[in-house]
Amino acid sequence: MKDLTHDLPRPWTRPRRGRVSAAWRDLVAETHVGAEHLVMPHFVLPAESGCEPIDALPDIARLGRADLLRQVEADLELGLRTVLLFGLAPEGSKDAHGSPAWDPAGATPAAVRALKQAFGDDLVVMTDVCLCGFTEHGHCGVLHEGRVLNDASLAPLASTALAHAEAGADVVAPSDMMDGRVAAIRARLDAAGFEHTGILSYAVKYASAYYGPFRAAAKSAPGQGDRKAYQMDVRNGLEAEREAELDEAEGADALMVKPALAFLDVIRRVRESSPLPLFAYNVSGEYSMVRAAAERGWVDEAAVVRENLVAMRRAGADAVITYHARAALAGGWL
Ligand code: PBG
Ligand code: ZN
Image (cartoon, rainbow, N blue to C red):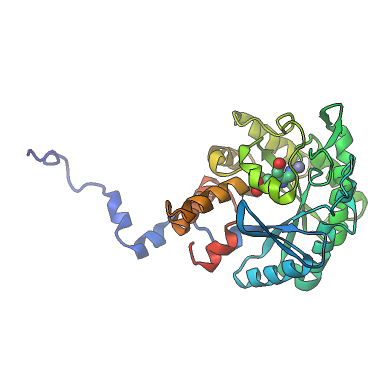
């Protein structure tokens, strides 16, 4: 066979020289994922103790406060220093307005107090602010004649954020997708003397089919309809820049793109259009798919999780919220 390289000028530029050994690859790698980049989500029961496994989220459970404290203490040993809390409503307490969401004795405020008392500033405590887990109808805002009202939802959301801030949350994270909620929350926090409490906005949150396991875990599925009239259309990318810009102007301290894997292009866009810290949410359905395939022996869980987390960081995320955080660190997968 004719040597086709014969006439090429030498020496060639050879990218393979940069891949020659593990040590060399580590030296020149462009992207790193470490414990400092990861946020562990937790589902919190309105109870002192308890541990309820969640079928579609293997190794994730709804925890009572004492169980949560033990788990967070163990996770801190692994270097996991940030948690995102999702509180559950007490049995039978949901109402039309979602009032258990802003109960100062609710699951989230109680867990925040316990965590901050135990760990202080060694732990960053973030809380999800939404109404869907607390309303009878399961929508993220106030429902009126089949529609989720935007402006009427702002006060209850701000009250919820304030209850979390009063309990000692470092950062509140509104996930409802109402327009103007960052400004409403910022104003309410500042008026109450919580100008130091941060806001991580779920700025770019799509109406995604990947939230299924989460809704079972948080008992927050809408009874009727879907969330497409408030969460973003998955077909849009330019709109992400607009959402990011608005939340930045309203006073958000950090932005989020959610989900992550099917939206890596959006992470990149927001990274390039806003200077704010950027979080990617590696959501429940993304976790469950990897776990299900790994259970069947179809993929190597450690390698796939590493590849996925690297991809989110390479796309431009500063931090990643992921149910894989503990296993990835405990197993040395990164
Ligand atoms: C509540 C909320 C959801 C998620 C985070 N906050 C669900 C939804 O919007 O229906 C999804 C997280 C996940 O799937 O892991 N608004
Ligand atoms: Zn919601």
